[in-house]
Image 1: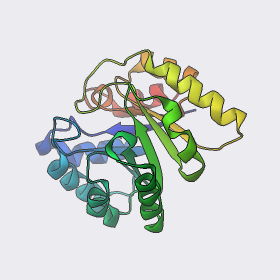
Image 2 (image 1 turned 90 degrees about the horizontal axis):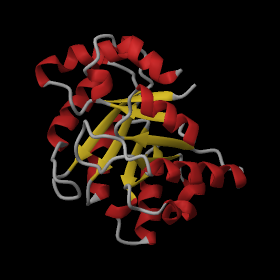
Image 3 (image 1 turned 135 degrees about the vertical axis):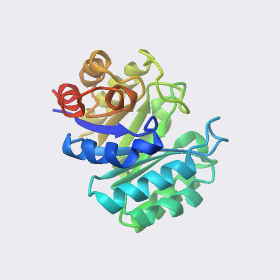
Image 4 (image 1 turned 120 degrees about the vertical axis):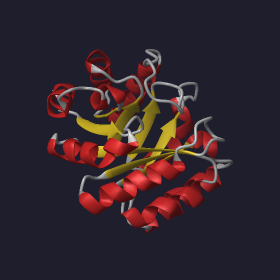
Length: 219
């Protein structure tokens, strides 16, 4: 059974606290915090996501899954690290050098937080192979990052399959998370490709029964 990380990008502000409570009682495994800076991606969600993440931490113990779609990665890590997230994921495309990648990995770990690296749909999965032994999760974007409600790009699942084969061949224990266009149909495709954590946002948030929807995605 896979785990579900619910993206709250589409949550309406006036319904936020009630929605977070309902997600907890529906047994989502993580809350996915989509942090965007308006530069790495067109949208800017930093202020509202920081507000939402702070609220969640005050009322719930649900693990926070922080996804940084930003440049100036360290600056944003510092913005969220005090909330004691379960994991912080940053984009390989946002970092200028391999040395900086290793510095960010160490910085996150030194703050007692797990580390993830994300790749956009057009980034080769091989670009992150050398970092895999030092991190806890790989996030494969199955849509172009920046906006919710997009359709999954099926070709990205080939990347997930290749990654799954690589980590099995090298006997590595690491989570594979997919993010973008996850619904009941595409969830099954993602699982078969090798993903064990699915990020789903509007499909869950717009459903009438969070618990039923999350349960169906997990099965």
